[in-house]
Length: 430
Image 1: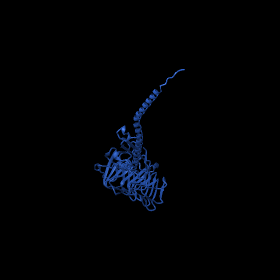
Image 2: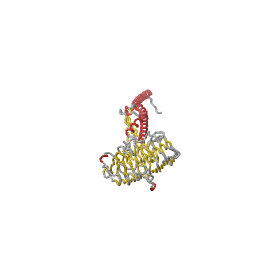
Image 3: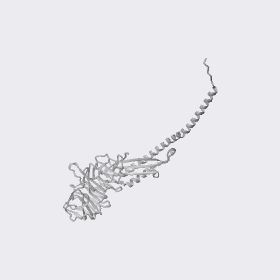
Image 4: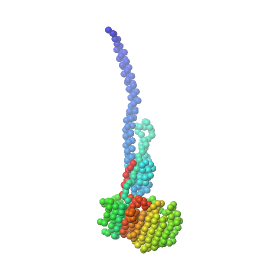
């Protein structure tokens, strides 16, 4: 039989040493891992805090961009857009001391780069580190971007720009106004922002939009809307950025009051100009060759039986000048389709506050393009051309009065005019 010799005391000593060795390794391992474990837990909690702050920053950017887009839709300046964006972002918890707000209109890059109907807001913020400070001492940089886009809108052909006039748009007497394929809008907040006076004024339009309220009669017909849209958004002035002619004294004076007029002064590339001063009346058959005609003071009248014809013509009213074309005159005018005054048939100076212009041709008169008096009252009656179902007439004034019988269209694709869009809405797209 094989004999086995055992040494129990050696076995116990070895096991004790082994246990002692394992205890030391665990302690070392714990010393190494515990800071990483604690740091990981802290970093996870801090990452959640970063995410929360990022969402708050993005929320502020979204609100700021939408607010700026809403004000841009109304035609406010870039400085106003920035002020509004900063105020709204602040109400959403953004503190400029901790970062920077940058506004671009149009955006500089991305899908909507150079889109004039878009506004971009960028917010930055730096937050101090907590647990993660053991890895880096630099603060955490957060960034948020949002883009708001002004979209859609319906083509209008009559617009009153005043924000408080009473009324903004008035249909007087027995006027009969037909707006074919276009709408009417008033930016006034007044209770009679749009006034159909008496019971005989008649209006047919696609839709009618009023920032304030409307006083209507049973002779209102809407072909595209179920009802008038009161408390609508402000409609932007599409010609607000068009510069007024300057250095008028350099433009040669016209001396005749009848016949054919041919501008010869090179006012701008592709634009010839002629100036009238102290004008009283035009009479007989008046033909205006293409160009810019400046009425420098005085009043532009037309005698009974006078016919004024012109293609590629812009008539600019300066230094308090007014136009008084009554219903006995025949007007056949259309604007240039290119150049700085593209689309403008009549252009009233923005310094002409409180004056009244009358553009009232007889039933055969046709005025194409924009009749634009942004700071003045305009009384208008006239027609768009109807050949082929086309025609484009826009009547834009501080306040507008539609008198007599008018039939206006807004088929403006080839007219050189700018889009006059009412009822636009703002949407976040990025």
